[in-house]
Image (cartoon, rainbow, N blue to C red; front, side, top):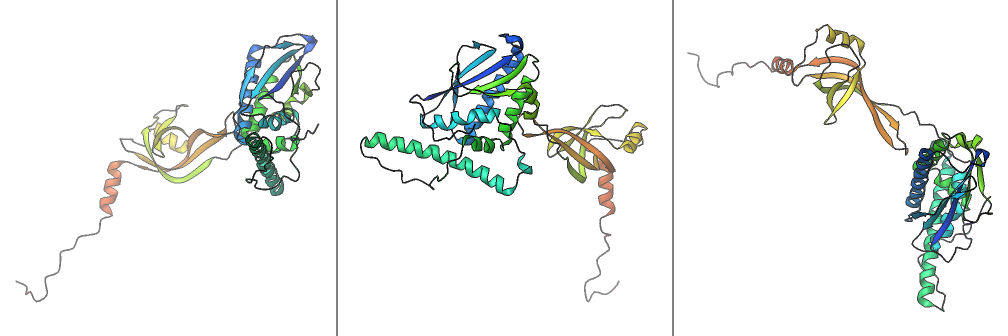
Length: 337
Protein backbone atom coordinates (compact mmCIF):
# COMPACT_ATOMS: atom_id res chain seq x y z
CA UNK A 1 0.00 0.00 0.00
CA UNK A 2 1.32 3.46 -0.93
CA UNK A 3 1.56 5.85 1.99
CA UNK A 4 2.21 9.58 1.61
CA UNK A 5 5.25 10.84 3.45
CA UNK A 6 3.34 13.95 4.53
CA UNK A 7 1.33 11.95 7.10
CA UNK A 8 1.42 13.41 10.61
CA UNK A 9 4.26 12.32 12.83
CA UNK A 10 3.88 11.40 16.46
CA UNK A 11 4.78 13.93 19.13
CA UNK A 12 7.43 11.49 20.26
CA UNK A 13 10.95 11.50 18.88
CA UNK A 14 10.94 7.77 18.30
CA UNK A 15 9.05 5.64 15.84
CA UNK A 16 7.72 2.14 16.38
CA UNK A 17 8.49 -0.72 14.02
CA UNK A 18 7.44 -4.34 14.31
CA UNK A 19 8.90 -7.44 12.64
CA UNK A 20 6.68 -10.50 12.93
CA UNK A 21 8.07 -13.96 12.11
CA UNK A 22 5.23 -16.36 11.30
CA UNK A 23 6.38 -19.88 12.17
CA UNK A 24 5.07 -23.31 11.16
CA UNK A 25 2.68 -24.80 13.68
CA UNK A 26 2.43 -21.54 15.64
CA UNK A 27 5.62 -22.24 17.61
CA UNK A 28 7.26 -19.36 19.45
CA UNK A 29 10.94 -20.03 18.90
CA UNK A 30 13.36 -20.00 15.98
CA UNK A 31 17.02 -20.73 15.28
CA UNK A 32 19.06 -18.24 17.33
CA UNK A 33 21.88 -18.02 14.78
CA UNK A 34 19.43 -17.23 11.99
CA UNK A 35 17.66 -14.65 14.10
CA UNK A 36 20.87 -12.92 15.16
CA UNK A 37 22.18 -12.78 11.62
CA UNK A 38 18.86 -11.49 10.29
CA UNK A 39 18.68 -8.86 13.03
CA UNK A 40 22.25 -7.76 12.28
CA UNK A 41 21.43 -7.30 8.59
CA UNK A 42 18.23 -5.42 9.45
CA UNK A 43 20.09 -3.03 11.75
CA UNK A 44 22.76 -2.52 9.07
CA UNK A 45 19.99 -1.78 6.55
CA UNK A 46 18.51 0.88 8.85
CA UNK A 47 21.96 2.42 9.22
CA UNK A 48 22.42 2.54 5.42
CA UNK A 49 19.03 4.23 5.03
CA UNK A 50 20.11 6.82 7.58
CA UNK A 51 23.35 7.42 5.69
CA UNK A 52 21.58 7.93 2.35
CA UNK A 53 18.99 10.29 3.84
CA UNK A 54 21.48 12.06 6.07
CA UNK A 55 19.67 11.07 9.27
CA UNK A 56 21.42 9.58 12.30
CA UNK A 57 19.25 6.71 13.56
CA UNK A 58 19.50 4.96 16.92
CA UNK A 59 17.63 1.68 17.39
CA UNK A 60 16.38 0.24 20.69
CA UNK A 61 14.64 -3.10 21.15
CA UNK A 62 11.85 -4.21 23.48
CA UNK A 63 11.17 -7.63 24.95
CA UNK A 64 10.25 -10.09 22.22
CA UNK A 65 6.63 -11.10 21.77
CA UNK A 66 5.03 -14.38 20.83
CA UNK A 67 2.48 -15.29 18.21
CA UNK A 68 5.00 -16.72 15.99
CA UNK A 69 7.77 -14.50 17.19
CA UNK A 70 7.72 -10.70 17.22
CA UNK A 71 10.51 -8.12 17.47
CA UNK A 72 9.66 -4.60 18.68
CA UNK A 73 12.05 -1.84 17.62
CA UNK A 74 12.09 1.85 18.53
CA UNK A 75 13.88 4.08 16.03
CA UNK A 76 15.10 7.19 17.80
CA UNK A 77 15.71 10.36 15.79
CA UNK A 78 17.03 13.82 16.53
CA UNK A 79 13.57 15.34 16.10
CA UNK A 80 10.01 14.28 15.34
CA UNK A 81 10.05 15.77 11.82
CA UNK A 82 12.28 12.89 10.73
CA UNK A 83 9.97 10.17 12.02
CA UNK A 84 7.11 10.28 9.50
CA UNK A 85 9.49 10.23 6.53
CA UNK A 86 11.47 7.19 7.63
CA UNK A 87 8.78 5.12 9.38
CA UNK A 88 6.47 5.30 6.37
CA UNK A 89 9.01 3.80 4.00
CA UNK A 90 10.40 0.93 6.11
CA UNK A 91 7.62 -1.57 5.36
CA UNK A 92 7.74 -1.07 1.57
CA UNK A 93 11.53 -1.02 1.69
CA UNK A 94 11.58 -4.47 3.32
CA UNK A 95 8.41 -5.94 1.82
CA UNK A 96 7.84 -4.44 -1.62
CA UNK A 97 9.07 -6.73 -4.41
CA UNK A 98 10.83 -4.09 -6.46
CA UNK A 99 14.53 -4.10 -7.16
CA UNK A 100 16.07 -3.12 -10.47
CA UNK A 101 19.81 -3.20 -10.93
CA UNK A 102 21.03 0.37 -11.46
CA UNK A 103 22.88 -0.72 -14.62
CA UNK A 104 19.62 -2.02 -16.16
CA UNK A 105 17.59 1.12 -15.46
CA UNK A 106 16.93 3.80 -18.03
CA UNK A 107 18.73 7.10 -17.57
CA UNK A 108 15.34 8.72 -17.01
CA UNK A 109 14.45 6.29 -14.19
CA UNK A 110 17.89 6.68 -12.59
CA UNK A 111 17.50 10.47 -12.64
CA UNK A 112 13.99 10.19 -11.16
CA UNK A 113 15.20 7.97 -8.33
CA UNK A 114 17.97 10.42 -7.44
CA UNK A 115 15.49 13.32 -7.62
CA UNK A 116 13.13 11.55 -5.23
CA UNK A 117 15.93 11.04 -2.73
CA UNK A 118 16.83 14.72 -2.96
CA UNK A 119 13.16 15.64 -2.53
CA UNK A 120 12.70 13.62 0.63
CA UNK A 121 15.90 15.01 2.17
CA UNK A 122 14.74 18.51 1.32
CA UNK A 123 11.25 17.85 2.68
CA UNK A 124 12.67 16.67 6.00
CA UNK A 125 14.95 19.72 6.16
CA UNK A 126 12.05 22.09 5.43
CA UNK A 127 9.91 20.49 8.13
CA UNK A 128 12.77 20.83 10.60
CA UNK A 129 13.24 24.49 9.63
CA UNK A 130 9.52 25.18 9.96
CA UNK A 131 9.45 23.55 13.39
CA UNK A 132 12.41 25.65 14.51
CA UNK A 133 10.77 28.84 13.24
CA UNK A 134 7.45 27.99 14.91
CA UNK A 135 9.28 27.43 18.17
CA UNK A 136 11.12 30.75 17.83
CA UNK A 137 8.14 32.81 16.76
CA UNK A 138 5.46 31.00 18.80
CA UNK A 139 2.63 32.98 17.21
CA UNK A 140 3.78 34.38 13.91
CA UNK A 141 4.28 31.71 11.20
CA UNK A 142 7.40 32.45 9.23
CA UNK A 143 8.23 30.47 6.12
CA UNK A 144 11.78 29.24 5.62
CA UNK A 145 13.76 31.27 3.09
CA UNK A 146 16.10 28.38 2.45
CA UNK A 147 13.79 26.39 0.15
CA UNK A 148 15.57 25.14 -2.96
CA UNK A 149 12.31 24.32 -4.79
CA UNK A 150 8.68 23.68 -3.95
CA UNK A 151 7.68 20.03 -3.58
CA UNK A 152 4.70 20.10 -5.94
CA UNK A 153 4.27 16.32 -5.77
CA UNK A 154 5.95 14.83 -2.70
CA UNK A 155 7.33 11.34 -3.37
CA UNK A 156 5.41 8.44 -1.91
CA UNK A 157 6.89 5.89 0.47
CA UNK A 158 7.01 3.32 -2.34
CA UNK A 159 8.90 5.73 -4.60
CA UNK A 160 11.45 6.51 -1.90
CA UNK A 161 11.88 2.82 -1.08
CA UNK A 162 12.45 2.07 -4.77
CA UNK A 163 15.01 4.87 -4.99
CA UNK A 164 16.82 3.59 -1.89
CA UNK A 165 17.04 0.11 -3.40
CA UNK A 166 19.08 1.48 -6.30
CA UNK A 167 21.86 1.99 -3.75
CA UNK A 168 23.83 -1.24 -3.79
CA UNK A 169 24.53 -1.32 -0.05
CA UNK A 170 20.83 -0.92 0.80
CA UNK A 171 19.77 -3.58 -1.71
CA UNK A 172 22.51 -5.95 -0.56
CA UNK A 173 21.53 -5.63 3.11
CA UNK A 174 17.91 -6.45 2.28
CA UNK A 175 19.12 -9.40 0.21
CA UNK A 176 21.27 -10.66 3.10
CA UNK A 177 18.28 -10.39 5.44
CA UNK A 178 16.12 -12.70 3.34
CA UNK A 179 19.04 -15.00 2.62
CA UNK A 180 19.41 -15.48 6.38
CA UNK A 181 15.71 -16.23 6.82
CA UNK A 182 15.80 -18.94 4.15
CA UNK A 183 18.07 -21.04 6.37
CA UNK A 184 15.33 -21.66 8.95
CA UNK A 185 12.66 -23.85 7.35
CA UNK A 186 10.20 -23.09 10.18
CA UNK A 187 9.75 -19.48 9.02
CA UNK A 188 6.71 -19.46 6.74
CA UNK A 189 6.38 -15.66 6.43
CA UNK A 190 7.64 -12.36 7.81
CA UNK A 191 5.49 -9.29 8.38
CA UNK A 192 6.37 -5.60 8.86
CA UNK A 193 4.34 -2.81 10.47
CA UNK A 194 5.07 0.78 11.58
CA UNK A 195 3.46 0.15 14.98
CA UNK A 196 3.78 -2.18 17.96
CA UNK A 197 -0.01 -2.62 18.14
CA UNK A 198 -1.07 -6.25 18.02
CA UNK A 199 -3.85 -5.76 15.48
CA UNK A 200 -2.09 -3.36 13.11
CA UNK A 201 -2.08 -4.38 9.46
CA UNK A 202 1.21 -5.91 8.34
CA UNK A 203 2.91 -5.99 5.00
CA UNK A 204 3.57 -9.74 4.82
CA UNK A 205 6.10 -11.58 2.67
CA UNK A 206 5.55 -15.33 2.28
CA UNK A 207 8.47 -17.75 2.41
CA UNK A 208 7.88 -18.71 -1.22
CA UNK A 209 8.88 -15.17 -2.19
CA UNK A 210 12.03 -14.89 -0.02
CA UNK A 211 14.34 -16.04 -2.82
CA UNK A 212 13.05 -13.32 -5.15
CA UNK A 213 14.48 -10.74 -2.72
CA UNK A 214 17.94 -12.31 -2.81
CA UNK A 215 20.34 -10.66 -5.27
CA UNK A 216 22.89 -12.85 -7.00
CA UNK A 217 26.50 -11.72 -6.71
CA UNK A 218 27.58 -9.85 -9.84
CA UNK A 219 30.14 -11.46 -12.11
CA UNK A 220 32.99 -8.96 -12.37
CA UNK A 221 35.51 -8.98 -15.18
CA UNK A 222 39.14 -9.25 -14.05
CA UNK A 223 41.51 -6.33 -14.47
CA UNK A 224 44.09 -7.35 -17.09
CA UNK A 225 47.65 -5.96 -17.28
CA UNK A 226 49.60 -7.00 -20.36
CA UNK A 227 53.36 -7.50 -20.47
CA UNK A 228 54.09 -5.96 -17.10
CA UNK A 229 57.31 -6.52 -15.16
CA UNK A 230 56.59 -8.51 -11.99
CA UNK A 231 59.36 -8.99 -9.44
CA UNK A 232 59.34 -12.48 -7.94
CA UNK A 233 59.63 -12.76 -4.16
CA UNK A 234 58.97 -16.46 -3.78
CA UNK A 235 58.91 -18.82 -6.78
CA UNK A 236 57.43 -22.33 -6.58
CA UNK A 237 59.99 -24.80 -7.94
CA UNK A 238 57.84 -27.90 -7.87
CA UNK A 239 54.42 -28.91 -9.20
CA UNK A 240 51.38 -28.36 -7.01
CA UNK A 241 48.78 -25.79 -6.02
CA UNK A 242 51.15 -23.60 -4.00
CA UNK A 243 50.90 -19.93 -4.89
CA UNK A 244 53.82 -17.79 -6.03
CA UNK A 245 54.55 -14.43 -4.45
CA UNK A 246 55.59 -11.26 -6.19
CA UNK A 247 55.53 -7.48 -5.96
CA UNK A 248 52.54 -5.84 -7.65
CA UNK A 249 51.55 -2.21 -7.19
CA UNK A 250 54.33 -1.82 -4.57
CA UNK A 251 53.03 -4.62 -2.34
CA UNK A 252 53.68 -8.34 -2.00
CA UNK A 253 50.81 -10.47 -3.32
CA UNK A 254 50.22 -14.20 -3.75
CA UNK A 255 49.24 -15.28 -7.23
CA UNK A 256 48.48 -18.37 -9.28
CA UNK A 257 50.78 -19.20 -12.19
CA UNK A 258 48.48 -20.41 -14.97
CA UNK A 259 51.05 -20.63 -17.81
CA UNK A 260 51.50 -24.41 -17.92
CA UNK A 261 54.38 -24.30 -20.39
CA UNK A 262 56.35 -22.00 -18.10
CA UNK A 263 55.49 -24.12 -15.04
CA UNK A 264 56.95 -27.14 -16.82
CA UNK A 265 60.17 -25.26 -17.56
CA UNK A 266 60.45 -24.28 -13.91
CA UNK A 267 59.77 -27.84 -12.72
CA UNK A 268 62.48 -29.18 -15.05
CA UNK A 269 64.92 -26.53 -13.76
CA UNK A 270 65.29 -24.84 -17.15
CA UNK A 271 64.58 -21.50 -15.46
CA UNK A 272 66.80 -20.19 -12.68
CA UNK A 273 65.74 -17.61 -10.07
CA UNK A 274 67.80 -15.25 -7.95
CA UNK A 275 67.10 -12.19 -5.84
CA UNK A 276 65.52 -9.52 -8.06
CA UNK A 277 64.32 -11.87 -10.83
CA UNK A 278 61.37 -10.42 -12.76
CA UNK A 279 58.84 -11.89 -15.15
CA UNK A 280 57.52 -10.02 -18.16
CA UNK A 281 53.99 -11.38 -18.12
CA UNK A 282 50.25 -10.89 -18.46
CA UNK A 283 48.75 -10.34 -15.01
CA UNK A 284 45.11 -10.52 -13.87
CA UNK A 285 43.43 -9.07 -10.78
CA UNK A 286 40.24 -11.00 -9.98
CA UNK A 287 37.41 -9.09 -8.31
CA UNK A 288 34.16 -9.97 -6.55
CA UNK A 289 31.37 -8.37 -4.56
CA UNK A 290 31.55 -8.70 -0.80
CA UNK A 291 28.57 -9.10 1.54
CA UNK A 292 27.66 -5.41 1.40
CA UNK A 293 28.06 -4.93 -2.35
CA UNK A 294 31.52 -3.39 -2.32
CA UNK A 295 34.18 -4.67 -4.71
CA UNK A 296 37.08 -6.58 -3.20
CA UNK A 297 40.13 -8.38 -4.58
CA UNK A 298 39.49 -12.12 -4.92
CA UNK A 299 42.94 -13.11 -6.17
CA UNK A 300 45.76 -12.61 -8.67
CA UNK A 301 47.04 -14.71 -11.55
CA UNK A 302 49.83 -14.73 -14.13
CA UNK A 303 48.34 -16.08 -17.35
CA UNK A 304 51.30 -15.80 -19.72
CA UNK A 305 55.07 -15.43 -19.22
CA UNK A 306 57.11 -13.84 -22.03
CA UNK A 307 60.53 -13.28 -20.45
CA UNK A 308 62.51 -14.08 -17.34
CA UNK A 309 64.98 -11.40 -16.35
CA UNK A 310 67.64 -11.70 -13.66
CA UNK A 311 69.66 -8.72 -12.43
CA UNK A 312 72.83 -10.17 -14.08
CA UNK A 313 71.09 -10.69 -17.42
CA UNK A 314 69.69 -7.16 -17.32
CA UNK A 315 73.12 -5.71 -16.55
CA UNK A 316 74.68 -7.62 -19.46
CA UNK A 317 71.91 -6.48 -21.77
CA UNK A 318 72.43 -2.84 -20.77
CA UNK A 319 76.17 -3.14 -21.37
CA UNK A 320 75.59 -4.65 -24.82
CA UNK A 321 73.34 -1.74 -25.68
CA UNK A 322 75.93 0.93 -24.73
CA UNK A 323 77.18 2.87 -27.80
CA UNK A 324 80.63 1.97 -29.11
CA UNK A 325 83.25 4.48 -27.82
CA UNK A 326 85.51 5.59 -30.72
CA UNK A 327 88.76 7.57 -30.16
CA UNK A 328 88.27 11.30 -30.52
CA UNK A 329 89.67 12.82 -33.76
CA UNK A 330 92.74 15.07 -33.41
CA UNK A 331 92.17 18.75 -32.86
CA UNK A 332 92.09 20.95 -35.94
CA UNK A 333 95.58 22.06 -37.06
CA UNK A 334 97.45 19.30 -35.28
CA UNK A 335 99.95 17.35 -37.32
CA UNK A 336 100.42 13.69 -37.04
CA UNK A 337 103.62 12.61 -35.36
